[in-house]
Amino acid sequence: MSGRISGIVLTLLWLHSPIVFGQAHFKRFPETVTNNGAYVLGWGLKDDPAGSVDSKTEIVADGPEKIDIESIGVDVETYERIEDYLVDTATGKIVATIPDFTYYAGSEGSENHFGLEVGWSPDNRGGIAIYQARYATDKVAWINPTEHKTSNVWPQIEKAVRRVAVRKEGKEAADADYEISVSNPVFVRPRRVVMDAVVGALSSKKPDAPSYSFEILFDVKGNLDAPQLELASAKSVSDESGRDIGDNEIEAQLNKAYHKLATALPPRDRESLKQEQLKWLATREHITAAEKDKKESIQLRLTRRRVAELETRARYR
Image (cartoon, rainbow, N blue to C red; front, side, top):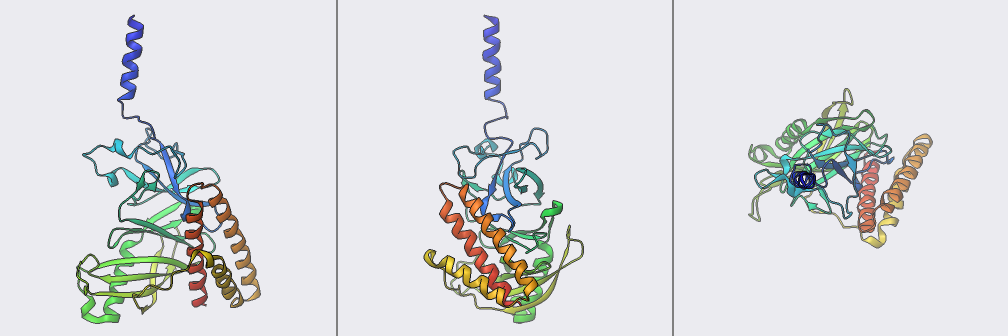
């Protein structure tokens, strides 16, 4: 009898212990995969019992198995226990933690009004990841996937954007309380990245709240483990959104963008672009094949992102 009671007590202790279902797992963000398919971003809880992310195992992003966000407890903010990662797709293992990124999305839902986007260099040796808050950018990270290195480059970008705003718009854009949102990072060359930026009262509910929009080009200088982003050029742009590409015409637009860039390149670079595009197409096929419920939406997001990237690279030739 005493043995049975001991077994029941042990079971109850296990059920009420901090080690709950879903711990020591992570999920990937499928649409953040590098062009060659070698790396992808992911997320999980700071819950590994060994204090390291090495032992975390992957579970399907939109599958029935969930990471137990509710286990965090009502007295702890969700973002205080979530972290984002760089994942090696070949080994299925986390190889780096992205500093101060706490975005999550999957069958658990997603962080309300927040977002995540990433642009990778053509040679897959660098990337810019943007963690977007409700109205403005929260953090921007540089990622060197091949060396498994990440660093916070938001202070550099924020400083450059404010300089551009004052240079282009004068004192009107110099308000220190103005918020900044950057988006659509595109590498036009391995060490040149362009992104959109908006400065202004972005969280204001007033319809005439001031805001200023720019397209800013940065040169990536120094060691790719933790580079310096140097302002190269900037121009004011309209804040009106461009024409949305419909689902039925996205493949035609992809081919058009690819051929426009290819014709602007010398033969050697054209062949490199061809191989890059073939790898990207194979990666898209592989990623979407693994997603059952959201296959079409993920493929559409990946393709729209690729179209924007190719078009931007063509403009900066």
